[in-house]
Length: 324
Length: 283
Ligand SMILES: [Zn+2]
Image 1 (tube, each protein chain N blue to C red):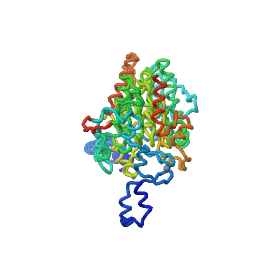
Image 2 (spheres, protein in one colour):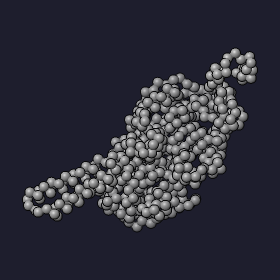
Image 3 (tube, protein in one colour):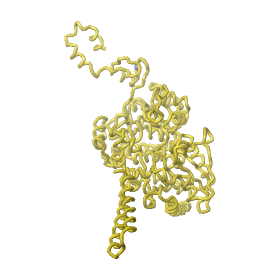
Image 4 (cartoon, rainbow over the protein chains, first blue to last red):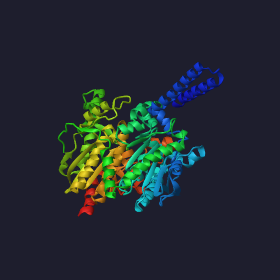
């Protein structure tokens, strides 16, 4: 069953209990019975959201009402003022960057931006950046580093745009340069995967000192659909691929690839942007306080070691043949 | 060329035609570019370049090192590293099986060799990728070996040469493969700031997460003629834009024209090209 169908079913149960409450004659026994029903449905709902599988979370991560970077810019920061353009080719609307204040401190905000309706989606290219987007991100991050300002990244993209123009302008080079250069910026960088962490297109602005992941966000080397169509030769096997790829926030934490999983309001971040931001703000405030204390050299050393340790999924056991 | 002459005189040939085909099978290959029938031995001695049209066939990781390193000699580093199958990944087959099969086929633990040797006298570290090992894909082993190579190059101030030949990140290791990109780029950043030469050679094909990390970060990015180089694969792009791709799109010459390569170099000149670059950087 689709996650949304199951959710609708639970919502229907909730309404039924409510209707019963209004209709039946109220004596002590039916009161107690109704209360029992209400609690059971609430438990169902809690369980539903706790035990979402990878594919169900993928649907939540892609929910069109999920908070996007500009929502976080408004809810977590004051005085956000956008910075445009890569100073080389153009301004990519699928990545937004801007100056802002976080608890009074000047900071830079960088993130993918998706649209909600068809017109916005097209304008934002479905949150799929082209090289100029990644170059804008690097340019403004270098600017922030120049003036000692911490950087907050919000990651939510299906992936870097796979198009002719993006290839012509060096999509791969833009991503690679970001990875190398962001690694060396001597200011605190706090990354939050808020929705879809779509492969290299996500990673290109997801290198930093703390990597957080919202509870229902996903992070993957390839989309479940893409993986299914290559390995299973059937895009309809996406739910299986999603499970096999281990893409959920809990998976990522168990693999040691993210630092913290940030809880979402019950039902998912899209049900309550304010509450989502409030929970995230506590995490980010605490992390920033930890990071601003570190001298830049120590910050960079810790960042290097953090990524150096990731994904040590090998053993030294192969019997090498003499060669050369 | 004995076989060829015998084919020309069918009358003196006692073997029935069918058997003859069986016996010659596997000794000849057809150039995928010009259609020329080439004797495989000739192709091998010509470093897998078509003698007629100069089409560059794929070269194995070992042959690549033989091409680049003096006297075909080197010391291998980190050769024992093999994958632990961290996701216990199964699609239509277990990843473990695919790994074992690739190891048997290539005689390698994973998709890359790290070699220390000399290149026209210059001591170098050279990483060479093997496309025959699960499409040259990058998982934890490739990521770790490239990172160690960069760190060793930094510690010993040795120039680093990486020959890429890869379809990109290895799906079967999920986000662990993805994070190798960040890990490698971090190490290359330190190498860059220490002003130690890093030369990236892009062979056919170099795509996905390999292009979007180390393959594009050379002090020089050099490609072989006709090599397919890109971030997204051509099929993915075609499906996205629903149009036929322009002729020569994502080929080495296309990238050269768009400013992402320093040079497109014929395989036979590759070694001397790299050597002169090292002279420029280090002499
Ligand atoms: Zn040919």
